[in-house]
Image (spheres, rainbow, N blue to C red):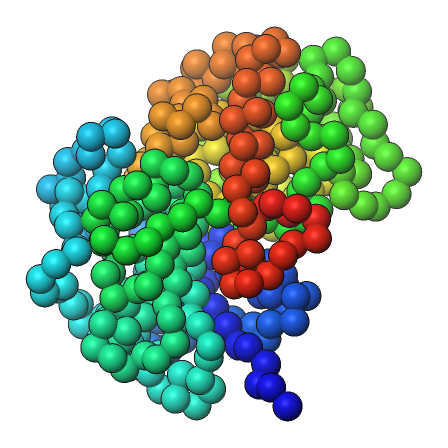
Length: 401
């Protein structure tokens, strides 16, 4: 009897985006008959070091974002120079040839990964987090990992810690990133459709659909659960222009002034997604509608006029799948800022420097032409081959679904 193929997906519980992508990819692979195991690379570190990193990162992003900005500049993207196409290439550092510097953290993660693959040898390893990409690439280059290693990038702007020439291939979100990765590593890099849950792909969302509630019409609240069913938060009357303000699962960034400006405009109802930050939710309760961790993001997206984002993460890609325009404002430092600027360069989102410019930017989306252009560009991402198709599977719903 032939052995069933097994794919080991390495993620990390830093926020929720990496884990959500890993879980959705695993679901698709299992549906196609491929065994999928998801492991948190932070759990492979000894002495509960991974849990300490998680807590430290969360504290830093909430209380000392300047510290993360400094760390990012020094370790993630030093000496950055743009490539010819304007996209930063691995912090201006090529990792194609010669010796690749190996950090102590990478060595610890690689040792844990080696133990894991010895116990349960996979057919292939897929990394959805940069530390996992470094660990797998390190083992692969030294001949200690027999299975091919794929890196599935979850960021629009790639920093140097995603890149290791020991990995066999890279799957990227857009052509500019794929070109940058090929130039930096010398490894194959292809575009894949963003990995989001199928519930976000609303029927009719796409070019020419006018997707998202229009300026003068109330959203159809539907008659029952299902993809695209609108479920308005308590306190939001039908017909209002609901604007989701995302602070990520950590509940970070300067979203309070954003909410106040939107509410003060009288034209938009801000719904702030506070993630697991209870203190942020408490503070915002007097400004408008503040939600904690939300399990029904597809329903919220179906009701939304636009998404205001600060990190260029998974919530942006979910909005794009739902045909909801994305406006970025005051991004979090480091990868958040780089991702926001990369999305804006690609025409996938609108970037405004501060909350004061938000109402005018949102007003312009009321134009069918402006809204349609944004939706078309975002929908094009999902026309790329689905991530699971790179592992020999065909998604019956078509590319990116």
